[in-house]
Length: 94
Image (cartoon, rainbow, N blue to C red):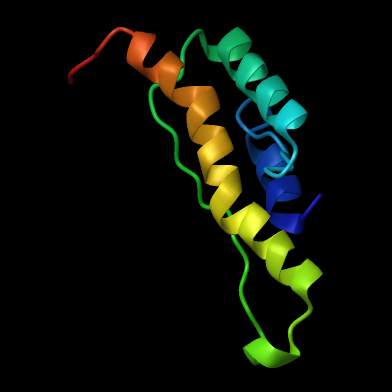
């Protein structure tokens, strides 16, 4: 678990969850845990990603695919898992 998540879990243990965004089973489990804890999901913020630190011809294809899995495809999986619940949640305006 990264240091930032560990610190967040310490500061707000009921609101932090470590998640491998490339693991569809882990995503489903996290969504279920959020619903069980809070009753609904109102918003999805995906701030997951990591950078590219070489020239393209020197990068390894496996690493490129891993970055795309994390930076691009995980957003699709997260959105598919969460958006039906967001749409079903009662709208609250403050």
